[in-house]
Length: 448
Image (cartoon, rainbow, N blue to C red):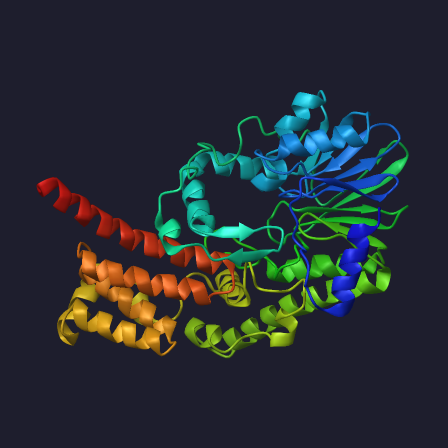
């Protein structure tokens, strides 16, 4: 029964993640007699209240049925309440399976969840494309929480499942029937459950406190990776308020904290240490960036001067394998300074293709840019290499040789990046160039 808790304790106490910490087993494990977790994407945590079951998050649309089956095998009682930590699809998409198994559960969520669902409907195709870039061409080993390399040809091959879901938010996802603003207390079967609102990864996040058992359901405030507080393709994240929420959780002196991704953690001192480490990392980034902004620094100067120590990023629950500090730095700038980076020419820039054509002409053409890009890549300067490869590609948008070489540079860049977000975007860049190569190859074949 205590295997997961023993596992997380060993990893945290040793400081070494030598075993899976972000597991997706689709199996239920008891954390205590009245509490269980189904390790899915995301997890669903289930409380036996004595008068029905309470599920915290439902997992995604494609995993919800397996979660429901595991819960039904654990207890015969119906799920009477669904508690949404927030409205991301991997946390609420499985709700339709809960509704299919158990009639009319009460759905508790923040007031902004409904606004999120409306926004997902309005920007459905945009969000599908974002996720293709963020996760496409990457095989995420969700058990290890690591990203593994595939054969390059496989990376660039069209994915048969890329648009298997036409709706970003699964059809039939339940909307909250009990909306929470800042704080709400409800009692289910004699168990008091407090819902607390805080902005962090989202503006609609709730974390839940069970005072009798000193248990916290943390949602995505704790994900056993560096906090997803800087995602380059998604709407605003709130790193400062995220840290404040972690401090509020710590003030409760919890004995058990259960995240929506990663391992549950037991032991008051151990939980305090984890929450303090994560909060301190975010607080450092926020305070340092704001100080530099006050000092007049540009975004370019801040990005290349603000970082976190390597030993901090080596902690099992702070590794930058999904999001990363550099993206959080950009997000802090966006929150406090807007979108302009203080470079005057980028306030109202020329089209990329026009600028690239001028630079290519001055430097000797796209071939000269690519030679310099490949030289930089060979020397390990992949930031410069990608700048030059992009200029070459924009200057010669239909040249298959240019794009074959540009794609190779981005595949090399992808291999060197730690975070899944960076890997996904760089893999997408390689796919863009491969599409040019394929189109030219197809045209040649048709002509012959």
